[in-house]
Length: 151
Image (tube, rainbow, N blue to C red; front, side, top):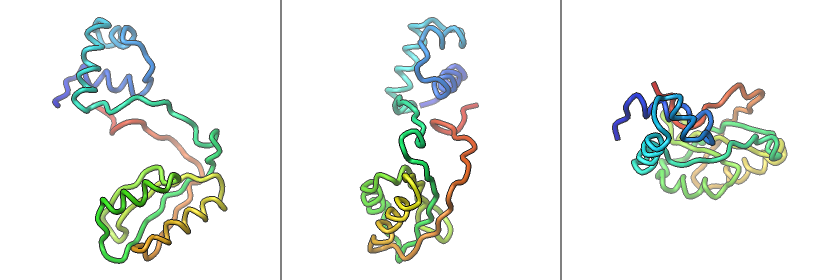
């Protein structure tokens, strides 16, 4: 799907404030509310906008420890195997395969260090994991929502 400048503006607004009304968005980009709704519907139908969700502070939910874990594997487990196994660990909030020495990079949230240690134990118990390398987050600075910034 090809995006034009209005689509990009609408996406920027929605990634900042997903509950904004079509009328308010339209006023900012120079469209009527119905025209704005049609564009948003088209962006959803075309798969550019994949959903709408509340952003929740992990610390407020009791998840005060965050870390990035490099997963080093013996052999090359298929991405489908990694996906299945890692999706079964709720503390793993995102994962991707990467270039370099590690096969995957995980973002993990836990209640505290003890809880985090149990997550590490589950990860290292996976048959193909040879070792991990962990970086604990001290102070989160910012996080962008959605895809890379548009425009």
